[in-house]
Amino acid sequence: MTWETVIGLEVHMQLRTRSKMFCACSTAFGDPPNTNVCPVCLGLPGALPVPNAEAVRLGARAALALGCTLHHVSVFARKNYFYPDLPKGYQISQFDRPLATGGMVHFESAERGRVAVVIQRLHLEEDAGKSLHDRVPGRTAVDLNRAGVPLAEIVSGPDLRSPAEARAYLVALRQLLLYTGASDCSMEEGSLRVDANLSIRRAGESALGTKTEVKNMNSFANVERALEAERHRQIALVEAGKPVRQVTLLFDASTGAVRPTRSKEESHDYRYFPDPDLPPLVLTVEWERAQRDALPELPDARRERFMSAHGLSPYHAGVMASERELADYFEAVVGAGADARSAANWVAGDVMTGYNASGALAVDPGRLAALIALERDGVVSLQAARRVFGELGASTEPPRAVAERLGLLQVTDTDALATWVDEVLAGHPDELARYRAGETKLLGFFVGQVMKRSGGKADPKGVQPVLKERLG
Ligand SMILES: [Zn+2]
Image 1: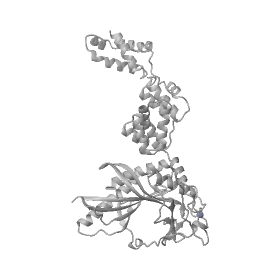
Image 2: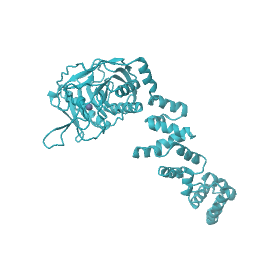
Image 3: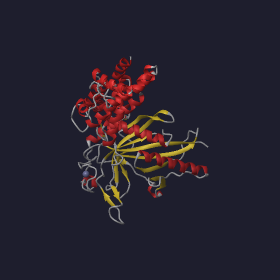
Image 4: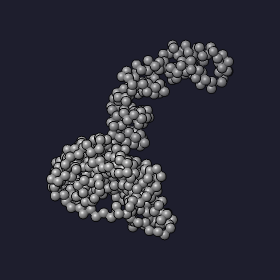
């Protein structure tokens, strides 16, 4: 039996603001517990929330980048439930009138090629606090620093067909969101969290099976692992003639398994109603236009332009456009006069290696362009250029000075080349005699010996003509 997997994802993204969604408390990560709190986010009686304009702006930008329709009137609602880390007894969210609906994200699926995923909605809400189980032995402590931190929840349609597709979609979504600057999208610091819905059905069926919800996945790799585990669990159930029940499961990264939470926690009736303390959120056409105008060129468009305007391969265009910082860097190197394809080779190679290791682009674009020119003009070999690049991050010297200091300049001067050639020929009389007797394939041997004699500094393109002239 072939089974088809149907997956939809809910992504909670922390909006990159300095203060919380409805009060002036700091959103700084890692501060001592319960230091960033006030009457509003503690839910003290009489305290009134005021929406954070910057959070609304960032949420709207993300929605526009996702191709959503931005609603000019949206409503904050109370989502009522009881939990120790929720001081008010409700979370302020958006329910039947969200900020935005109806977007689309594209990604490349290994199985299906280019796939379009519908973004059903993006709404604004506040985060809850955090229960700490490891601070006080035998007890649970509560840290409310996160209570009230602004989030955008992004809900996809059930458009993904495998755990690998779920991961590829998340990579594309994260790239897009990072371009907008709406969030730093760090799973380690909890500014991007993913919940998944998964069901299976027989291949060819159109009705959806019973879905389960999987939570507690702290990396994209673990999203894929957790969904593989849940997919296998559901298939085993159905093939054994048992029903799939609608449950919430937690992923355990140490065992790679999913286990159900206590069923009591799922039977929620949130009793949503509009928050009487908050008027509807009203946005104007002009405001929306300003947000749209402020969006940068997005990854898909940039990738296309890198192919059409710079002649990059789809692979190189994809790598250059993968991050806004990298794409800006590539364009700056080209802007400083480097050939686009050489620049792409460098950026996809040594530049990326350094960037991935240190998180920084250590060599400014102008100096990389100068180095690329040295290699193009035969002043240094590619090997030597890579050594020079390795030195550039730590100094402010021009690339040519570094190459000189390291003795890496190629010697193109014919007199110097001739001296090495003569020395090599004098040192190999047997090979010389064989060459002159017609064994012309020995030319490569002589070029190699001249390179060796010069310590790698001879320009190989210059050596051949001098050799041929001497060999007569
Ligand atoms: Zn506060």
